[in-house]
Length: 135
Length: 139
Image (cartoon, rainbow over all chains, first blue to last red; front, side, top):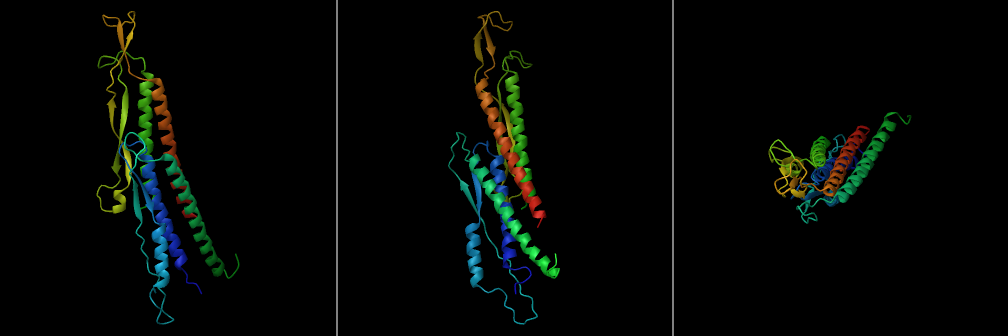
């Protein structure tokens, strides 16, 4: 039996947080398209998320010693990576590529919408259970 | 860190590009202006942008790397005014040359396209943030 708020919900809500954070970096790059000397920055977290999930699978979280105890899901921490693009194509030292930023923006939105949708479908399953199978 | 910060960053981009548009409009309107309050022909103006960190204190490592933009200063183009030979002009000097503003129409039009493009990119970022926040409300 799956717990009420299991690993999937944890991962999804963490992903939503990280995607919002990534959007802030994209917004910063877009606002500074014309700022001389500004270097474009990107937030990467997929790799860290994948390895955190792998280790979570192997490690045990708090073990239930008694059937009446609640199983505790630990907060797993991801440290995202900030990558700076130093090479500049413009004459003023600015390294922001507006087309790349717009593409990253579109990808980010899609990922956010997908994760958000999966999370609400999952909670929707809960609603079905609460309503005893009726809608 | 939330998406409201992103809105502030993108709106700073909008204001900066709008100021740039105003400066470009001023340059275009005064392309033939030979008289100014400070004397001499109109000097072409340009906006210099600077990135400012969003956080006052550099506590959070992540916040340290986020910048909004502001128009640091409006400078005058140091290029010399054009000398145009027109002895009948009321502002001609004793050699018959009039000092005209050093504004190139093509250059200003290209800058205007650039400013519009940047403005639209910032609008797209705002729409994205807004839609993400609305989508989250539907969970």
